[in-house]
Amino acid sequence: MKLILMGGPGAGKGTQARRIAEKYGIPQLSTGDMLRAAVKAGTEVGLKAKAAMESGSLVTDDIVVGIISDRIQEDDCKGGFILDGFPRTVEQAKALTKMLKKRDLKIDFVIDITADDEELVGRITGRSTCSKCGEGYHTMFKKSSKEGICDKCGGELTTRADDNEETVRNRLGVYHEQTAPVLGYYGKKGALKEVNGMLAMDEVFNALCTILG
Ligand code: AMP
Image 1 (cartoon, protein in one colour):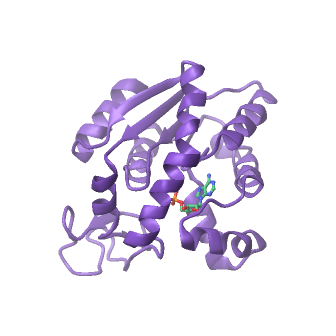
Image 2 (cartoon, helix red, strand yellow):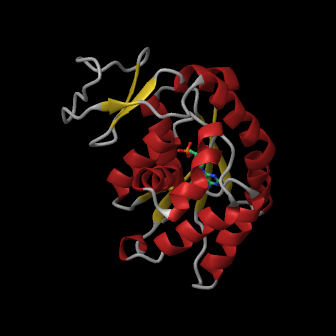
């Protein structure tokens, strides 16, 4: 099963991708996570991506296409994968179609998790993630019982540098301008489905599982 999860920043792509990955036993491929790891490690890709990520703009297509092209060739992707945060431009979507076609593969599902912009801003400002296991928390919707510490594994909670209101608003603008056309690209192919991301997390997950079967 090869799946693309679409949706604005904070729509729940990462959270839902993790749950789907667990249920279906396929890897979650998050370009955001991969780029953050590259920035942290100080690699060439990381150095090139850092400024764009900090301002909430997009990293260049060639960088992310290169990352995904390498990653989907790894063994754990043989049974499928979940793309979370890629493609974010029509150029990336076209490059993905091309790289899959070369191997006689195609995307099975593209699902857009929809939510209002103001809801997204509220969700993002206040969220944190466990640096050890990746579990997500929020100061209003899902507090950890001990401040700054993960309930699941005891790891330290960290806040993303780009999860502040100013950058989030820029990320939303970028989403509407550059990423929303990707929905049109898959819509024309008849591959696009929608799930209401304003619902509770479990309800969104159930709706996704109903589509995936
Ligand atoms: P995310 O974790 O998906 O919100 O991504 C965080 C940041 O990484 C984005 O704001 C972009 O700067 C960069 N990024 C992640 N995925 C992509 C992509 N497919 N194309 C361009 N930039 C990306």
